[in-house]
Length: 168
Image (cartoon, rainbow, N blue to C red; front, side, top):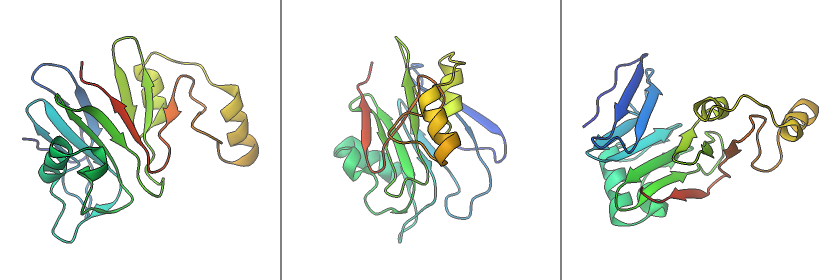
């Protein structure tokens, strides 16, 4: 079960080392704990989320195990995105409905990186280049078009979409 130190970089790994999590926890009146682990499984919530019965990330993870990514967030309101990982279902990155808390992803030959920061994904993949087309859109228009972002090798998860990666 997880516990987070507030305001510190927290690092957690699954018992097998199949996944690794690094996060900064800061005081949040809406959600005291941003992730929950249970053995090889983990759920991470990014964004502002509430629930009429209180946000219970253990229940979110159980709904993912029992159903699918689309039902994991049932009962939650707000603009959060979720990342769920279990051996049975693999990884699901679930984009928030409003796009305020975007998830970014990239892949190497043997691993996938998901983050709420595109440059974190790029650095974790050892990528230091910039993609000139989305960088030009950002400079000229103030936003990017499509899922490409200025950090080369990184893509954004579209609003209200689910990205999946099988276990192993």
